[in-house]
Image (cartoon, rainbow, N blue to C red; front, side, top):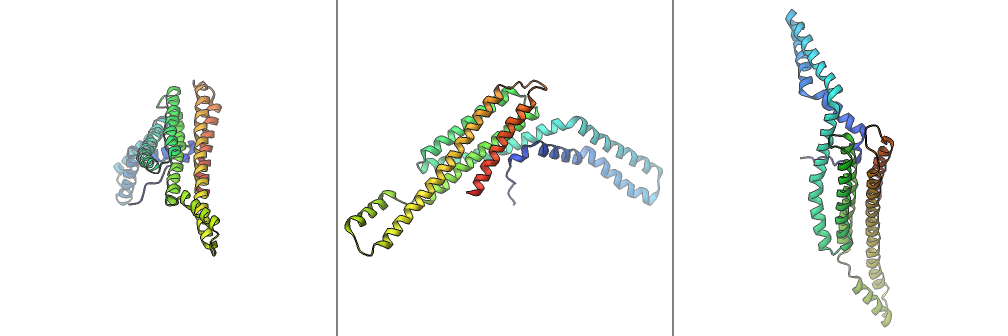
Length: 271
C-alpha cells in the first residue's frame, strides 16, 4: 500500500484550500449524481425519443446545477473549515507517534539539548495555538490556516531532531577520549611507521567533529523556529481581529511563518 503523501505548508495556502473545496463541490453526490443520471437519460432519449425523458433530463440537470450553485454560494467556507480540520487531525496523528519515538531515542543517546528542545517546541506551539484560539473562532478560515502553518513549523523542528538522532547514532561508536589517548601515546613514544595509525585516528575524530557541526546547526535552526513562533504569536496577540481590521498584518504574519517553514525544508534538503 502506498504511503499517504506527507503534508506540506502549501496545503494550507488560500490557493490549495480553494482548489480542494472546488473539487469537493464539483464531485459531491448531491450535484454529480443528478448530472450523471441526466447523461444516462440522454442516451435513452437519443434511442427512444420519448418526450418525458427530455423533461427528466432537464429536471436532473437543473437540480445538479442548483446544487453546484448553492455549494459555491453558501458552502465554500464550511467546506474549507472541514478541509483544514482534516489536515490538522492528520498532522496531529503523525506528529504524536513520531515525537514519542524521537524523545525516547534522544534520551537513550543522552542528548539533553535535544530532549529539552523537543519539550520546548511543544510548549511554544501550544502557546501559539492558545493565542490563535483566543483571537479567532474555530469555524473561521484564518484559525485553520494559522494553526496549520504553525504545525508545519513544529513538525519541521521535530524533523530536525530526528536528524539529530541519526547523526548521533552514526558516531555513537566513536570514543573521543580513547582516540585522544591513543594519539597522545603515539606522540610520546615516537613509534615508527605510525602515520597510518595517526590518520585512522584523526579520520574518526573528523567524523565526530563533522557530526557535531551538523547537530549544532540543526539545533540552531530549531531555536530560530521557536523564536519566530514567539514573535509571531506576540504580534498576533496585539492585532485587532474584528471583521475588516488589520487583514494585511495577519496575512504578513502567516507569510512569515510560511517562509520560515519553507526555509527549514530547504535547509533539510541541503543537509
